[in-house]
Image (cartoon, rainbow, N blue to C red; front, side):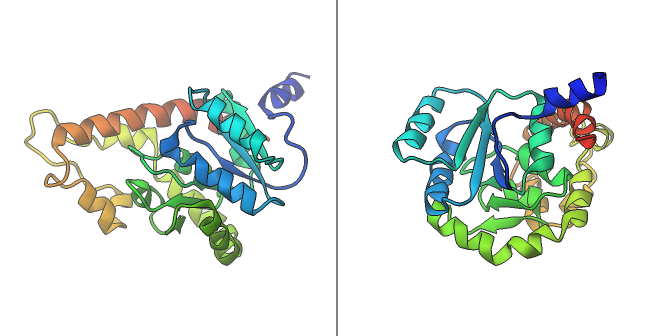
Length: 239
């Protein structure tokens, strides 16, 4: 009974049946929500579940969905970590056409479940997805649909390497491989995912980022990874 109740608490209700694409992000213009709505309008037979936290921009998005009659868009707000993990585990693919990112944790979360991730090429996202993610060269919704049609089957067949790549990001590694010590006497050891990507390695060189900024950036990311890992990953495995 307790197992069944725990499973019911994880399930996100009201999604209907059939495969859905999942964007998880803050509800903000910088996350390129407008492009997601344009994609939904250009692809009415494809369901999109937009998950995020309530923000001042939420009402704008909800009015736009209603005004355009986007019946294939479902908005789910303020979900628990277990519910987000359930969505990751059950989606057909992950969308993240963000225009501004400090790190890009949601793509890692989705890739942990072996899901094909379609990301923007902007900011730090190519450092996160490296060669296992798919990328939008254009960030308007109508131009995004052909990317799916061209790359969907090959991306879906790569679940194992995608999940393996995501496992390279962990709280343990963030703790064991500090970015830089506070004395500034040593540089951080190169991480495996950074060695595999010249772009990632360049992004963390002293010429492009100060030691203190590197340390702050990884401290924020490490805290988020630990919280999600402890609460969500195990819960979703049973679902």
